[in-house]
Image (cartoon, rainbow over all chains, first blue to last red; front, side, top):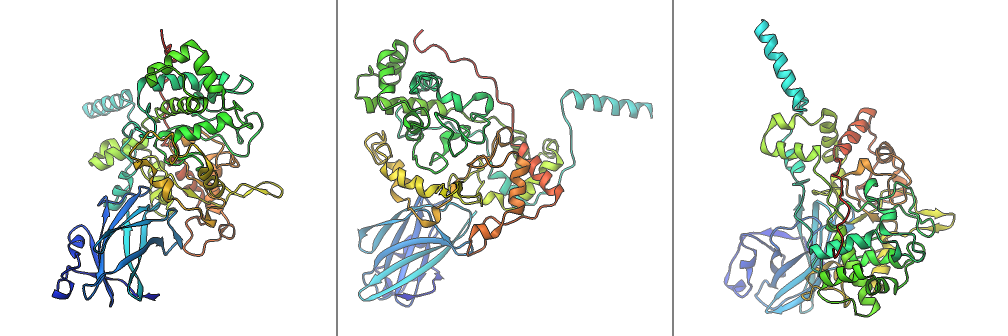
Length: 133
Length: 392
């Protein structure tokens, strides 16, 4: 699996990405991308509370606007080298839309969320930091 | 001059009459004020547990209080829930190790604010308060009531049968296991009403957020310094967070694992195993929440090797009135607890990254300040009237 550093993106739009529902990331969510994939996501509920379960609503596609799959979602606190006490499950909603349920951050601080995505033979990991106060 | 003296005298008398004792105020940064604010407001809204049909229902709470004090639920008819969870001892027993039919390996946890947790017991083997309540009823080492005792009592005692009918809307005619669960749900409904009183800290927190320096300055200076340590340098609020001063999750804080030579308490690791095996967990047929929205934690929790030796983070309200401390009652006083965190061995904690628990190396003054802050989370609870008859 290729490891790609995540880049925080602005709300970008080009004709090649037109089929990827990046609007999910605008305002209340995030858009991240690599050389291969684009992904937009938001949390449900929008405000994450320490110790309360939440879900991630995710749209993912290739940079050419092709189909991509969200394979796994996890999170950890790199400074403390521990993960969540919970394992998220992923449900596909079709057309590159996914819902990852069952996440829970049990401490305030910096959490690194990892998204394993796949399209054809290409797999990679996108990451995004969430600071929880 | 005489006028001024008279004015000062009147002011002093007025302050004394109102019980007001002002202290100097430390400077609080906006970030610190936000951090203090996250430990309130208090009290929280009443508990509503969707897995329990009598949660918050007055008749269910009344039945639960009677059952809580009912020794006939135990195998020998001599022990009730109230034997270990005593109102006059902060809903615990003051012992280092709980004493049921035999002495146990862990301390009796306080029931203050218990209804707001999501995991129950030191090892989190229960995912609802009612499921957790079943364990001591049946455990041969504790009340040893057996699986039929609650049902026999609910059917055979006219007052309890009447209380059951009021709470559950029908006579106690179900199978024994169903009636055991219903008894536990009534017991849970009662326990969830045990909300600790407001404290000096709450008054300070509210005044600080409101910018009311006069009211805030009634909070002792030592407690202010201790609070600054708690939310700052000592990072206690990484785990003791929110209005109840707990994440409700689990941690290893360097208390020895061994309960006897060659025998360890696996803590959360064992609790998760028991949770998965329990017919009373929220994934089973006794969960009253048809939508299943309250099962997310149970469905998604994972059992990790790192859970070994972890125990539930206790809330800190009323902490100074309780004790002994830690899951095994190994520390006698709050001063001992603060000393533990000041001197804990990093070698014991096996942390690869920045350790969550590290020796704080507190000075004597800092230790005393932390204790002063913790004691400001205590308050005298109002006296409890005897429970009213179930069916007068």
